[in-house]
Length: 322
Ligand SMILES: NC(=O)C1=CN([C@@H]2O[C@H](COP(=O)(O)OP(=O)(O)OC[C@H]3O[C@@H](n4cnc5c(N)ncnc54)[C@H](OP(=O)(O)O)[C@@H]3O)[C@@H](O)[C@H]2O)C=CC1
Ligand SMILES: O=C(CO)COP(=O)(O)O
Image (cartoon, rainbow, N blue to C red; front, side, top):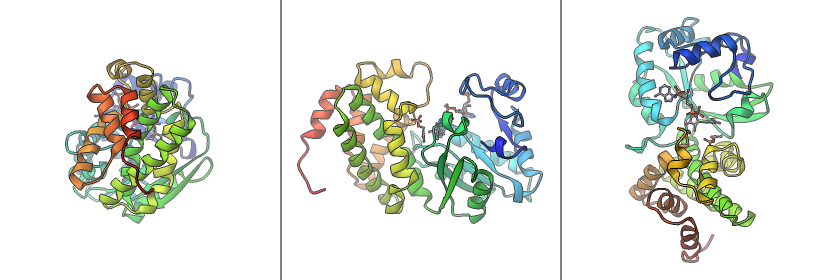
């Protein structure tokens, strides 16, 4: 998307052969095989070259976007901190797209980034309903850039807003990140429900009560309640829970139709909801937040609870006011 708006876009990939193929043939055979990438897009496997490319024109034109999963955030941010040390007068906007909690520590991406970047950049998160394939096809999309730094919100908006994308600004980094992390878990639940053919009523109930769960957790962690009815809350939840391009939903669908988690993930597919569901549950327990759907998903994914049994346990919970 950036390269089709701005000619000077350099992509970095850790795999040298893949970087060379993308740079020369403008096709990403591994992740987006059917998409012709813009001819202006350059690609390198040299991390320092990529950071230098962003910094050499000065911070007014720089924007660094990290597109790695949560599991790669700490490593990528430490490499970035090392590379940025060579540009002492630069403090560029750095934004990330990942959605989840760190599996071991339960940290949100902004906490991982803060620890590694140590004030060398102006951080922010880009989130919202945005299947990569549709973005690459140039179809319309609306996203939120959340950062406490106005310069970062402005840089992301200047780079991405217009033509096919609308970019909305927010300062609620926690709310935006919790929405992105937990919608993946609820999407797995919706996939399981649809895999069991439980119907549209059940899916709507899971989305709505899932949103209540996401908002409870997000507010407990310091997010603003209204963020959860926006693009990064309700918007991304509806997309991921109902759109078959979602990998998290597809994990649920496969489990609901009787496949094992190991079989579904055998190809190495990224499904952040699987990776962060336990950490989310642990955070809920720590903050005294009830997360019944997340708990049911964890029991099905990791403790061998039969999906139908999980549904019956959810339905038999005590009645309460909405
Ligand atoms: N795909 C989508 O539609 C959307 C994804 N997101 C979020 O963005 C994040 C990334 O998603 P997505 O691109 O789909 O994930 P994928 O797993 O499909 O791709 C991740 C990319 O990051 C690279 N990578 C993984 N770990 C590391 C690491 N430690 N260091 C460097 N590079 C690494 C991979 O390289 P390699 O190929 O060499 O393994 C690959 O190029 C996720 O958190 C996801 O939830 C957000 C919005 C939409
Ligand atoms: O976050 C996404 C869309 O906004 C992508 O969802 P999946 O990771 O489930 O494919």
